[in-house]
Image (cartoon, rainbow, N blue to C red; front, side, top):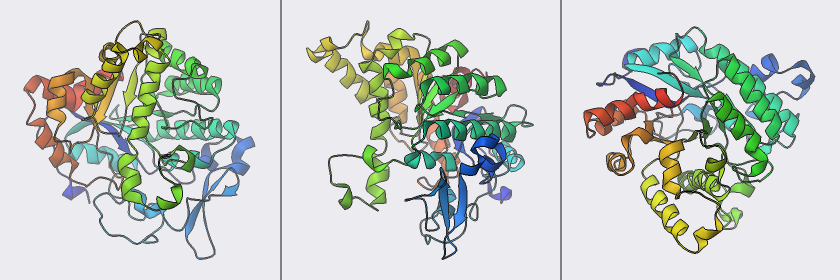
Length: 382
């Protein structure tokens, strides 16, 4: 209930990556009519358990009553079929008025909102045209969800790189409609690297519009998971798969150096989401070290990699990262956000307490930046 919500002791806090449980009927309500026969749907199997229908086909993975657990933040034991989608949703996960009440009780200035169901379906989407239709429907929905919040609930558009020109067009439409930036999954349905030149049209549009482009983890398709081990040994190994999922964000991030994207688009803004931040100092050191070697001579970069990070990249941290204050000192207070991941189950529910513990270790100027000033400035909301 809302009475149990803890208030942040410091003013100016902004959640850079909170989630909602979008209405499961949104694709039937927001898709263009020609696509509604293949709307994303939650249906029931013969046992009465929910499964997702994608492109008119039953999902191979999203089934068996798994959907209640998507909002099980802080729950340590739960049966797979404990409840339907939304049945365990905490206060503020599904209703915009409740969410606004929640962030106000948490003493937060604003929250940037990301989805839940839309983090799942791309693992089985094969038709680029349907993928674009699904993202357009969600983007219209999230703008409507955030209306009436006085700028405290901030929508971020979902893009799919399967059709780059369509994605660029949707980015322009969504930003005009009220979205503050965009995000893509950590894999691309064409299996091309994120920064492949075929996607330059999207980066050019983001630069033109002045909005950030984020990379956010989602459910990972089998082909995109670690190829080091035979997948049959890792199926159902949720701890391992969750912990190493952040590797995909590092791969995507590094591709922007391989293809010299930052030189081509010097005002393009890249944001790394939900993969932690305490690794970034090492990664920048490694990027610079390899760049200085003979291997680095193969890159068409004008500057060393850390230069571009300083100019064009920001990263979101988990509140429980003990090393974050050191990263702020090493890399710079201007480069970091924090995010709750509310209400998803791979974090404990005491994120406000953890944010306080992190913030009190920062100098006052750095604290203001990391708690909220940075993310509001980068997304043009300051």
